Image 1 (cartoon, rainbow, N blue to C red):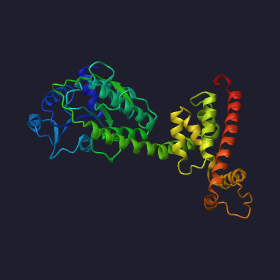
Image 2: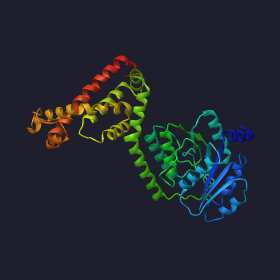
Image 3: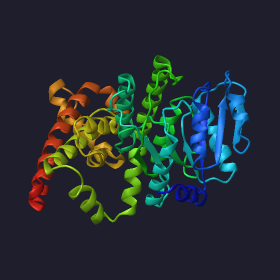
Image 4: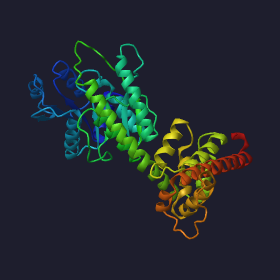
Length: 390
């Protein structure tokens, strides 16, 4: 695209460039000047800088500037910048760091990608962290972030930590819970949960230790990021995955669900059978309250089909629970010389509590037996109707 075409697209799509900055006096001017080659739709958020930042910004009279009285973190600066961009009527915001690592002449990459997508999308600059000159700690941190983003959203990206991004302002969440560097993880995960595509685009990167000022505090910020990912993983397992499954199931007929989510889902017939066996085993095991967490976690660890495992784990849905309890207590009785006549008892958790060991032994035998039988049965069934996928 020519510069004129980029400028026209920025105007048509109502795109602004948001620059959060904190004590980057050495590089800020160069970044702003580079962005001005493409647009004057610039919002600079001065996050309580104590250097010459405010003086530098004052030389640009045609851009929007927000000066915060004290430094509260990059996430807070971005949130304020997003609100300002929406107030000014913009639909998209390209964020670029002011430390000089991003090249403003990559702005056309984002604009062109947006035009090709022709829909709301969140784009993240892929800096190719394996190239020479990238600090190893940065590469490790990015790989760590990529893994958890995939776990939480199912989307595989090569770079999830780059601050060079294009955000669809009307599709991102309105409220956030993190104020600092971890904010950039929260926003992409929660946007993906809204079924907005999140994709990488290739950009250049410059690491110049003589100019670059990083405010990332390795121990403190890595701890905050780890805590955030722990919370996001928990929400993923207990809410997002079940929600997505229920929504997808509602949108499809039973026949279509079986065809697309069982027969044509990822994995060989053996993998699908093991997924079903795992779900059934956990569903019948004495792990009440943790079934979804364990099912999804083990499916990820053993690379099984998460949907099939989750569906199978619901073998213990409420109408079946009394039968499962009775069968477990009956099977476990011979191993502890326990009671077998439960016809005169109400089958509830108080009964389980009074015969706990008998129930645990019986439920584990029941879970192992039923999961083995159903897993083998489904394998034979799938292999018969779809033998090429065995």
